[in-house]
View 1: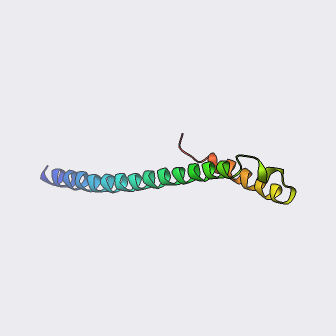
View 2: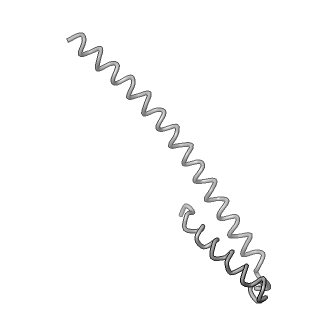
View 3: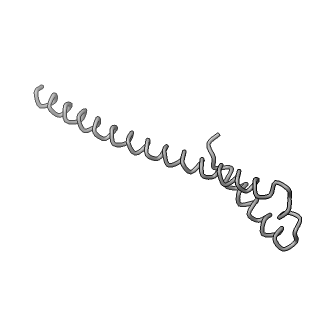
Amino acid sequence: MITLSIILAIVITSSIFIIRNLIIKNERLEDFISKQSEAINQCDQRLKQLDDKNVFYADDQIGFFFKEVEKIQEALNEFTLK
């Protein structure tokens, strides 16, 4: 009975340590995702601010590049926190 109690105590102690470490890693990842989402939102706002008068969109040579940048930004917007 004593050996069972010792084994149970070791298992519980190690489980607490493992769970604590997993929680810390999870919080770090949440912070990283939050920062990435903020960066994507800032890029989206800046892109809209740059072409608020559709100057880049109307130009043929720059317009093609700008359309591609907008497509990339739209793809990135799918990864933001909602």
